[in-house]
Amino acid sequence: MQFSIIIPVYNRPDEITELLESLVLSDYDQPFEVVIVEDGSSITCKEVVDSFDSKLAISYYYKDNSGPGDSRNYGMKVAKGDYFIIFDSDCIIPKQYLNEVVTELQEQYVDCFGGPDAALDSFSDVQKAINFAMTSFLTTGGIRGGSEKVNKFQPRSFNMGISKKAFEASNGFGNIHPGEDPDLSIRLWKLGYQTRLFSKAFVYHKRRIDWAKFTVQVTKFGKARPILNSWYPEYNKLTFFFPTVFILGFSGALFLLLWGILFPIYCYTAYFIAVLVAATWQNKSIQIGFLSLIAVYKQFTGYGVGFLKSYIKVILLKQKPERAFPELFFKIKS
Image 1 (cartoon, rainbow, N blue to C red):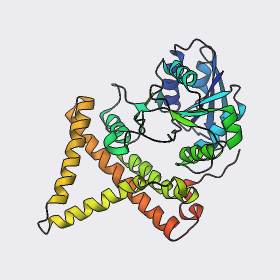
Image 2 (image 1 turned 90 degrees about the horizontal axis):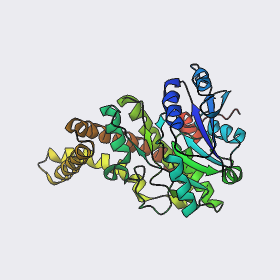
Image 3 (image 1 turned 30 degrees about the horizontal axis):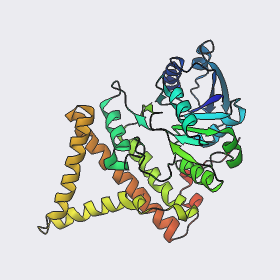
């Protein structure tokens, strides 16, 4: 088995530097290639890639901007390996990563896998708080953080592997973004392929976003889910409604507080205290604990509001997703 590592990048040469430096340190003793796909960037990373030419088997491709999904597809089409590993450009890869993947594939082969994300000590406090919000059992059920308590794991494309055979059968990612990764997972299931979580194949996900960008990101996540539910209703789950119910319930609890009804707000207070304690304990920092409260609130608010808007337009009003939310769809050019 030969691995091809596919990395789409858009205007972030500094991130590529850190990612490639981490791949140079890999303790995997077999050859692997790295394919960089520049997705129409105005600030390219070609010079950075060229500087690693003597350290990695690396190739660079520039294409018109058509989104991360199509860029990953482009990379897999030109790659030489028979198993593709996909990273986001803001990831740092532990040296043992590829060996962990090999171990998992030897023990129980699957044509598509996903791995969790973690935070390095060098990450900023805000990055650690956002990482907590995105990975904690208290927020996402731990799915992104390594929990295996799911029937069918949907790999996320910041840390994902897929065989060449499965890619060719499925035609890879679609043009929705975000949401392209669960869309691909479901299509693979329908084709008879299996997916699985490789809990030890984690990456350090260095999300370089501020609070405003984080809110925009999770709002788009919320908008994408009802669209996926409309495409694949058999995979709809009640848990997808949780952030919306949480936010509506919180607003209701504040309203009831005006009438002296305290129990609902006590429940929410208990939850936020649990988040504060868990985030503080995990990061050994009360400051990160409080920042995690902000991250969790923004996560639930952004996702919940986005989900509600999309549910009304796509599910109730039967609007076409591409018309209702054109910002979620790229026009494929390659």
